Image (cartoon, rainbow, N blue to C red; front, side, top):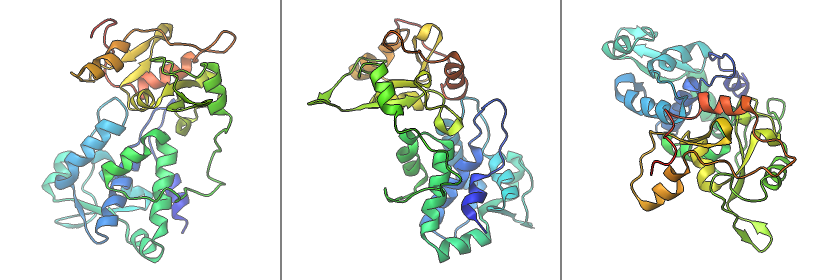
Length: 297
């Protein structure tokens, strides 16, 4: 059985490019717990809070319950659920899962495959990370689910992978004249820019093209906050700052909150700005909450 293919083809609700990372997040969490204890079960009532936190931080802006993937992941053949009554999930209702003592873990065949081939765990994790999340979030997400992966461990086979463009970074940084589109940071060591990155507006994992009009040159801090939904790009190509972001230090006020309503810096004349379709996708699928009014510090 090809577990990488099965992982890459998890059945998910999808419409108009909407994000639905519920099953991938649960599977990553289960892999992290398997790495810690290969025989342990995850009782829903004990892990519900952890899973809800993952969905709030790495899921789409609209709220959902972890009961949904806990029940439905069974249909993909990688997960099993038992209750106090015996095998089988009682349904996707929170009360059903709590009251029946529902517990889940990786399917027996998958657990056996992971024991036979320990490197398979990292490869499955990389598939999930590459398919559903931008690279800027991979390290934080692994830490959040307790996964330890070696940097050299690779993802899925090339026939499942859509290749990224190696020219994307150079094209985007050049278009924005090697400065952060949000704050203007333009640090270099000699002639080499440092701390500047090409951010996809519509994530590459969700068919975002490797084109300049889907990119922003951002400093490392603002790239991370952009991918976490703290920052966005609104009408008129002005910076959005989420009202859910809280920071009382001068650094938080100056480097994040004060950006609200500012126009983007760039791109240079003759270069296409961020396309409205990509901005709209990011606002609906990544940006959290309502934006702060301009000038609120």
